[in-house]
Image (tube, rainbow, N blue to C red):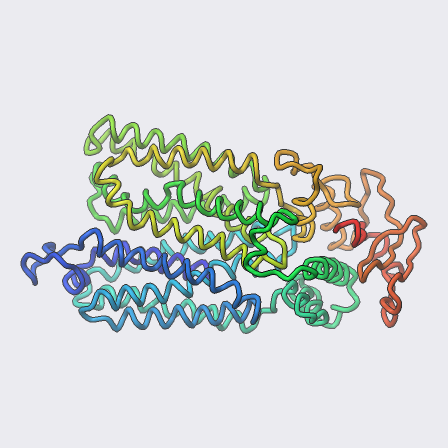
Length: 551
């Protein structure tokens, strides 16, 4: 629902700017007030109305980090939803002041920006590793769904008389944050945030809820105990260093590396050119006889939404790196076709217009299945816990900064170079693919703690990271298969012959010793509860690493 709010608020403005009553009230170039089609916005005013949302989201993303760290991911989303609702109320109560409407979008942007940082982070911290990618990708899916719904509602209200045409579209936006607030009140808090605050028992219950384990078994289920101990060991290691904003820019443990990587990936997601296609979709589609810009928006929105379903499967099935690399090349190729045809011929020619439309749709297909969901997945799973909220905020702020720059300056740029603008985006897609190849590590199928360990392994390089596996596992595939077998409580045949001996507890974490014995190395740490060696699932569980081997 957080992604839906993002998409709905983003998608509604392009159609609202075309509505007659809205232009009469807020435009600055009406030659004869009262006649249809004679009012229009200057580039500066339309850019300000559209772009102030992005400025608000940029600020909101940065403010969302300390809020999420202080009050928790769940309550942060509730507060940010309330802020969004305040912005909507300011917009629908505007009568003749375009500045009031723009300020309302700025305030709504504060809420959207905070949600855009908090929601993927909450999803990544809560989901089991084997479905984390698919679950986080639903954030992008609902962004596209929100955009499509905004287009559909706009086409239904455009013929309403008076201000109802645009107030209805904006006002309906109040319902979605209300749904999110009610839903989050019934959801558990992030287990990793709870452990970082010393609330281990609550974290075990939260883990049990999201993994479908009955609450009363939260203290007995060995997988819940294993995951909680693994997170706890990671938190203890991470919390040894006080994490302020400056910590995000220190090279220790590749923190600066990952901060710059996240900001670069979010920047290049904007520079793929997707927003350019949505902005100029109406002009392109007019060349083949579709003159209704509302219908044009629905066509592009439907392609974007439908293809995102494929993106969820692709990112989960093929990992993160290769879909982004191939997607960048694919997008670049179709942008070159689009720009070359548009600059070499007459876009109003039906044949040339058809080629440009096909190029646009094929570009959107590639974007929706790779770069659109993939970047949001990576923002949730790339950073270490102690700086995750702040790094995610910086990366998301980078996205919104470039969103604003493109929204505001695109009309001026296209006035000068027209469809040749596509060549610029084509080059950016190729650069983005190269950045992924040389700098991004493959994080699929790993726990967030293992991702941190992988980035800090001096023997692991981005182009070899797919073969990296945590200690105790023979391969990345072995990680997923053992976890699935353990969750089903079925014996797992170990292909690598890795000894699955009993476990000892090291620094509050279960690990193997050389003799296959269970030894409580922390006094009192195993007292009062069954040891893992005595668990009924002892023969089926996957190996668990030493805490000191991980860090």
